Amino acid sequence: MLEPGTKAPDFELPDQNGAMHRLSDYAGKKVILYFYPKDNTPGCTKQACGFSERYPQFTEKGAVVLGISKDTVASHKKFEQNYGLAFTLLADPERKVIEAYDVWKEKKNYGKVSMGVVRTTYLIDEQGVIIKANDKVKAADDPEKMLNELS
Image (cartoon, rainbow, N blue to C red):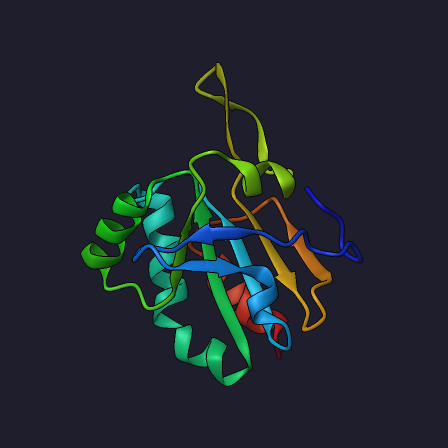
């Protein structure tokens, strides 16, 4: 996990519609950049729906929400359509950004060890500096917690 005070690495990734986004496109806004393991899974769906429900409140506070996983553009599009998500999902199947943000880690699940995305949320300020970083994310609580961080 990258530490608060670190300049957030810039990147360029396609969204669920294939349009390219760079972190630098959002200069002047706060960015909630969250990494999640997989589209259409229970925890990831709770987290995404929570961000989507609160999206108007995030925009009122001058923030954007960007979700990143290693799923494809097509998978993200289905995820967006299945749940009517109101924010941008970015596809990183080559894990370039996932690795740049240090969220590709060894995980233990039911005694089995594998590599995967550790659910992590970053709050990045208007100048592109990480001001909050959390890798102990509870999927259902994360959107409300991040909204409170903006107050």
